[in-house]
Image (cartoon, rainbow, N blue to C red; front, side, top):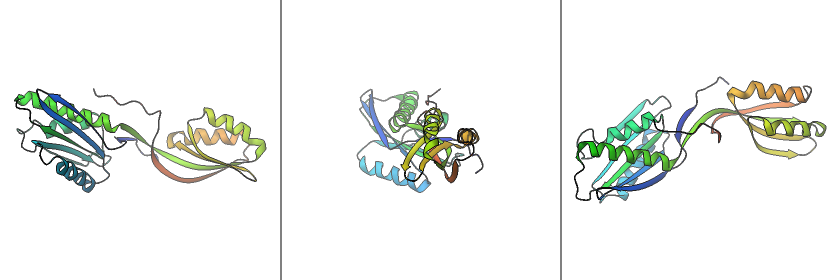
Length: 219
């Protein structure tokens, strides 16, 4: 159960749109575990907006950003795909794809205007999809007798854990999710309050989007 680094990704597929000088832009974001997932998402948006002037995109795959690709899709080189990718990289988001669709409104934006527009489209897509921090976490089954449950319940309400489920049978069994970095302190606390009688059974380790993760912001 070696500690693993947290990473940022997208919570869900989302989209939002805006207009600049009569051009309509729609930013789409999607969490993607593989490059194949990213390409399938991009193809789906391209098919949906086959009548658009441009469907520019970028994606980053791998917790260490091992795969990064982008496309200007007919816009002047460096004015679309790279600005989309730059926003993704600045925000530290991985395992995701962003497509920014443009319907040309008849007013030229110029190179600088295009860069700003596609960067805004990328930010809009990420915001609509929700940037989350996935933290490596451990799931435990904790079993105590009824005489200990009240103390354990009080402890868990103030501990950095998520109580997923609790069953009351011959004993009380509760399923906990806790950050791997908090494991030692939480388990020691449970042992101390139960005088070492609590049974703590490790089940698995998973990445989980903790609700109290620091809010993301673009610098």
